Length: 621
Image 1 (cartoon, rainbow, N blue to C red):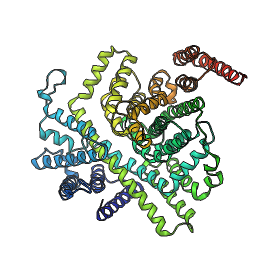
Image 2 (cartoon, rainbow, N blue to C red):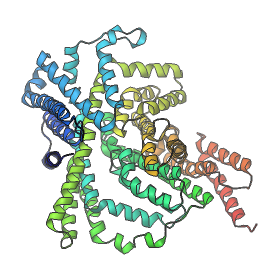
Image 3 (spheres, rainbow, N blue to C red):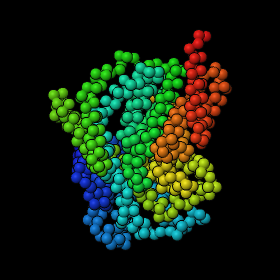
Image 4 (tube, one colour):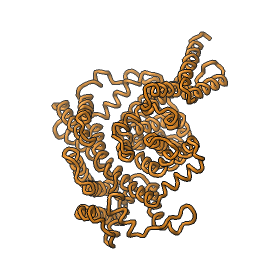
């Protein structure tokens, strides 16, 4: 990227940050106006950050293409801003001009999504649009009445059902505010604070380096919108450390990929899907966070236990004491102050009943204030400004990805709704499953894994929520549980072979074959494949159904997160491999048996077995 283009990108990133900061503080503009301005800004920034033909001899041609696409985007967005009142009051018929503006904007958004996340997503959107147009010509159950180009334009462009719909609205307000919050937090010392805390907490335990990766990636992932980006960020620190201490390369890559993916299912942001889910399910954001809390805790406990048991069996090294930061350094005000101030501001916003976006604004204000106070005398005003601007640029890059993905996803969802494809697929699944809850859930889980492959968390969730969640609700599963079910499966597609993109990135950093790394990742993340089904067995897992229901869910979950890793790590208990396997399978069977007392029976048996194993291990040979 040339110096001039870098300057343009930084200026645009600053403009996006100021726009988001202003609307978070003082309230968003009218729906379509807010969304159109936001999309125009992020698309323009996106073409500055991801230029066509950069550093190539044919860059002048790429520049011309970029300028045309930017002009098409700005024209389409400006048309919406100028004609907002007419669009919302008259519901106008599409004209040739509308068709041209719609086509230019959609092509621009999809081309930018191709540059940022690859070809799979824009192809899916184009298939959705093509299906709406050509559906009348298809045979059998796939056939629908068909829609012409003008009707499709009215749906996508001239209203709030298509590209200006709810998903783009969430991206332009809540998600953008949290992306800004997270990026500034990381660039003003939060990133180093996370790494230091992870090293101190996990470094001197068995599998210390892997536990550092788990903690650090989880903390980063909680405020990140992409597991793949998270692997690329924290993995460049944690994976080389694990390899240096003698950890197998596939194992190091897998630990980072799984921990980064787990951050996407952990509150408060859940890869930005928490905000989208709140809008789709029409429940408060706090309800999503509450429901996702226990599953996230169980996931990380499971990863910790698996890493611990594998490390004990393989004799993996601890991190040397002299490489760990002292607590005095970690808890120094300049390190921890901005993080605490940011979280305090966020909490005050929620406590006062402000919107999620305004609460994020309070968090940013607290963060910047604490950063200036704690770094005064240590950093020059120029260096402080440089870090803040770097955070704004990083936030702009994140907003580009989220903005274009959700705008594109909104186009796809509008086509799915227009053609009835989601209802048709859900009905087919229910018909094949014979209205059996478990058969339907299993089929939905498998299809979610396939549909989510190669897609970022939020885009994958939006797709499966539109197409597959209705199949679960049709067989009696509560709406929120159904959406969490499909969300978890769509999320873990990034560690599931064959298109396990998070593993690909981790394996690239570890310089190892991705295939063994993928199998290690499936073993480490095994709990995530069970959590969706546990949601169906135990409503208490989403903190519903009363005290006893919640206690049963917790006990069952804790038994599973110990017994399953012990089974997969081949932990010696009785000294006989077959007996160990049968015992652990029996305990797991008791834990998932849908009878009130069985989780407690499973817990009792597990305690006895583990105590026997510990006594046997201490016995002199």
